[in-house]
Image (tube, rainbow, N blue to C red; front, side):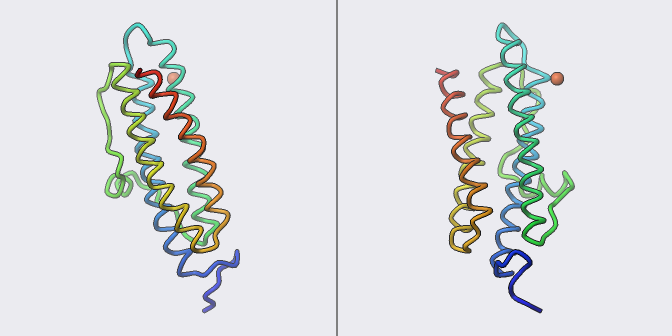
Length: 157
Ligand SMILES: [Fe+2]
């Protein structure tokens, strides 16, 4: 068996990256459902702006769920696709019955911080493996989400 995969990467580093990307995928899925819960359950004077903002956020997270899963497939592996698996390995925990606007935003900031940490780990693993595809995907996410954290933090004052 060749130790180089279809896209020219060493299978051993592709294995490690795919495993870590599955961990990232699990975090995205739990975080996505948290954001969806904030969209549904938020109450109070900022309902209209937050309800809309949370929809924008969960829509973006869902797009990234698909991109991360397809990167795993591109590396020659299978993405996890059961919530029971996600719950076992996600650093981000389920956040339920949250109604207060600032509490929802705080949950988002914490979730993004966990994603940023994982994506930085992946970015450096990918660089070591000469996997520019994964590294640049992670860089794009990091840059975007750092800005989102700034904005959400500004909202919190
Ligand atoms: Fe909705």
